[in-house]
Image 1 (cartoon, rainbow, N blue to C red):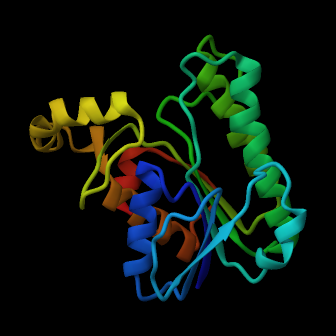
Image 2 (image 1 turned 120 degrees about the vertical axis):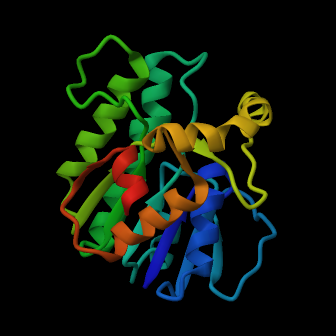
Length: 219
């Protein structure tokens, strides 16, 4: 199985990359990055590309793929709805439409968020925008589209968030996360569980749709 990964340097993307490299069913991982991460592995090929809205220059490297794991994302804090729409909807669809044309039999896994608004009509801006990109992805003729909606995520295996606020929160709350998991199992997942869930969905024959925390933890 050959997979393409977006967002490999983020917290979730690091977890997905780790699980892809460990999984014997995956033969090749191509990771699209703006600058080389310096990570080396026999399975891993990094595609350095600067414009995530235009893939014409690298289309020859985006064929023969079985799955895409799209883990790029930014917080909506401090952004207007127009700006957040551009980096959430427009950026995602720029990649997805090209990949769908080049690899119509592939599956597409997208990291959304718990509380995303499928109606696109709610009062919360980020949830509306996430709902817009979810719905747009479901309309593309991939073999299947999986919309992952994680909430609280526990980073494992030395993985850290690039966002200072999140790093601080994980440092403060880390000792209590195992207790939260024991009391309310579906209120928390981990980078390892989420990575394995994305791989399992990409390899399987699940119907397209939304995967909430309980689904992620059961895959």
